[in-house]
Length: 294
Image 1 (cartoon, rainbow, N blue to C red):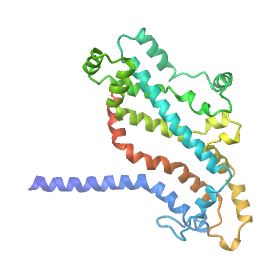
Image 2 (image 1 turned 180 degrees about the vertical axis):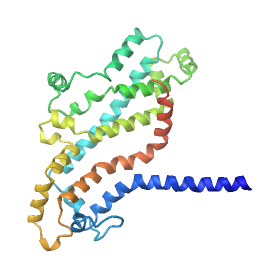
Image 3 (image 1 turned 120 degrees about the horizontal axis):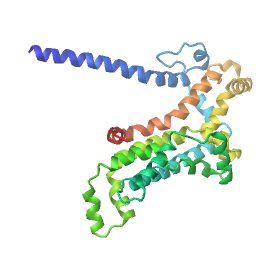
Image 4 (image 1 turned 45 degrees about the vertical axis):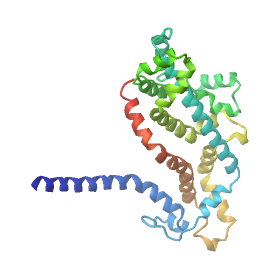
């Protein structure tokens, strides 16, 4: 009985500690969300802490109706979907090749690839390389440079090395070629780590704005993150212009620099947060197995 009592106390303490930890993790985003839907004049005064007051959604309506938002959202979605797919394919295929003992000079090529993860030519040489490849002001500048992520390749390679070789040997005896073994055996069995690196790539593609800043001058190719980044930098002047064109008696819904920054934060963060729960199971399993060794 005494042991059961100790177990109950231990569980209660655990629930309290992890409950507090979960609250600390969730509250910042909750705070941002309630401030985006509360009266903007109260938000500016710091009076919204736990519960929303004067609920309205004009901040989101105003931001989503701004010039370029819809078009840039399409560009961001396309680069995220296509970039993630090709990145996962490139990393997994490269990893599959490096798991083969028959690969010519495997150790040399593996080290040659891995060293690029630690050393970069620098911003100017990379820019010149992108220019010589004819990728400036093209959609493919978002896709091609990130098609073979080395870190993701290492994770996938480690996972694939745990697949029993007998499966591929049996398939090879039955006449399966290299690509058949890759698509029919290696990829399906590596689904947990594939989901993990896909999530890494998805977050990177969705949040990226530096490549737009450096390589894109065509307004039609601007990503959502870059457009919002510009709005964020100009939030003071944009909010002032918005207020000048609105009825000042409706101060609760007139956008302010603070409400604009908070709304942009939610718009950028929410899509990834909606995707993550569906991939969490694979993500946890994949990262635990794939990161055991390099």
